[in-house]
Structure formats: structure tokens, C-alpha cells
Length: 299
Ligand SMILES: [Zn+2]
Ligand SMILES: [Zn+2]
Ligand SMILES: [Zn+2]
Image (cartoon, rainbow, N blue to C red; front, side, top):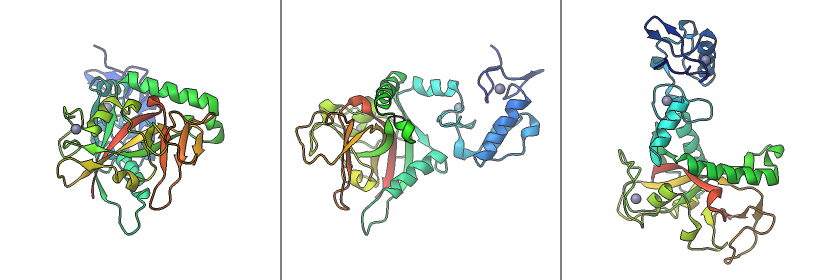
């Protein structure tokens, strides 16, 4: 077996000196990895060591969710293709995001920022888990997003591809999923939380609603909190933060409980809310949405 690929460029083999295998292919990659870590707020100043002992100085705010040793690579949750593949091989699985991690902070920030309930402070976020799905499932979502992007050209207007947004969904939990040490899905077919994470959202399971037979999410965490329930008493509640391809959205189509698709020329429907009845976003395609994070909080 060779020394493996450089932790920075993932292209050239790691530099080998006698019996010592360096983390990087050379000084250039070692320095660039250090600079990257420095930018991300990590410990710097070890560039001259050519990567020695780097793992002891990794900034936990950007640590890889799989090996928890090396810094993650850019927007990926993982440090390397190897760790990404390892996580995927266990899919569908939950990987705990440590408190203090940038990803934890980002999810927590969105939760608190979108909690709109007069007179009630946001609950504290206790645990965040990244939901890792099989590559085949990601591919279908990415394909749908690319189709919507090709039609709507959202990136030209400085939006994300497909106008992708993160939206909340609250549902019924029959088990203790997400509580300390519990990342195993239960076997109950009526545990909606486990079902959604295991199989993603399914229109066939939709019970309909004010805007038809679609998949309902909200930008407001307190709205989704209202739908989150525990079948058994628990000190915590759990909701999902999802990736949704919003595309071109029809705002306020009026009550339309018979809709089975977005109105012609649109990809989704948004029902704006007042303070009491918060906004809802509805998509009508299974591949327009994926559960991305499980968020456990103390009400
Ligand atoms: Zn390299
Ligand atoms: Zn890793
Ligand atoms: Zn369950």
C-alpha cells in the first residue's frame, strides 16, 4: 500500500521521509493547509513543521465529522474522499456534530434566528446530527436541483443553485432518536421521524393540507416545533432541518387543498404567515427535498 493521498490537494501522494509519512505531498500543500486553517480561526504557526503533529492542533470548529481528526475540506463535512466514502458506506446514518463546531453553530443560529414566538425565548439546542444519505439518493436530489436551476437561472441572480434553502419540518417521534448516545433508528413503521430520515420525504405519505398534496416545511423553527411531538415523555424534542429546492415560488396562491403540483411555471408554493400562522413552503416532488440535520432541543 502506498502512503495515501495528500490531505490538502488529495491528488499527489503524501511525502515520505524514511519511515515517516507526512500529512501532505510537500511544503506547498502543508503551508496552504495551515493558511486555510488559520483563516478558519484555527491554530496556525506550524507551517514550518511541514505538517508534523497537525492532528494535535486541529481546530474543533472545522473538524471532519467522520474521523474527527483532520479539518474538513471547504464546504464538505469531511476531510477527504476517504472519510466521505466511509460515511456513505454507513448510510443512512447520523453523525453527531460536536458543540462548538461551525456546523453546529450555523444550525443553532438558524434555529434561534427563526424562532418567532412572542414571549417565548428560543429553546436551547442540545444536539445536532448530520444525516448522511446514500450517494444514489443525493444524486437524485442534485439532478432535480440542476433541472430547476437550468430553468430558472437562479445563480445569475446571486441566489443558490435551484434557489436551495434550509427549511424546518416537525413530525412525530416514537423513539428516543437523537437523545444522548441514540443514533439508531427504531423499527416502528409509524415513527414518522425515523421513516423520513430513512427514506426521505414521500408524497404518498402526505396527508394533504391547505395547499394540497405536497411536502410542507417552514422557515420558522417555532412553526415546525408545533408539529414536533413525542409519543413517549421526553425532556427534549426533535425537528429536521432540510435542504429544499425552492426554485420559482408562487407566493400565496390562496387556499388550494386540491393542488398536486406547483402552479404552471412555478416549482413551489409559499404561504406567507402572520406572527401566529407562520409561513409554509410546499414542494410537490420527492426529490425537491432532503432531510439534512436532526436537531434536538430542550423546550
Ligand atoms: Zn498536496
Ligand atoms: Zn476525516
Ligand atoms: Zn423512531
